[in-house]
Length: 107
Image (cartoon, rainbow, N blue to C red):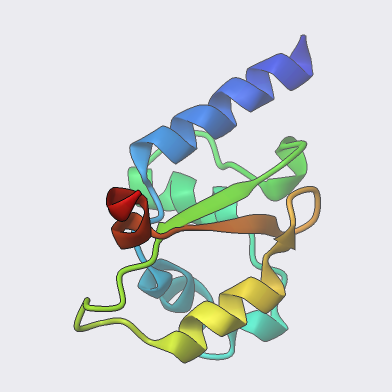
């Protein structure tokens, strides 16, 4: 039962698109964030103003979903590469998934 409740929280976090940008991670942990243990649920809870502090240990899996938009003026390939190498395991720091909107639209 507890894992189902946690999964519902994860789904809500993802559907809210609470972590909207790479900058959320940098704002919390600094430019060398990849040298830290990044706690994504904590960042989300803080940004959303939740009264209960969320922690990565409260979740079975954490997923990050970003849209790959190369034409965005804030796009930085180095940031994407850092995130891909860091967020590789959903049961550890989180798993990064990247959506390629332009490719999807062409199919």
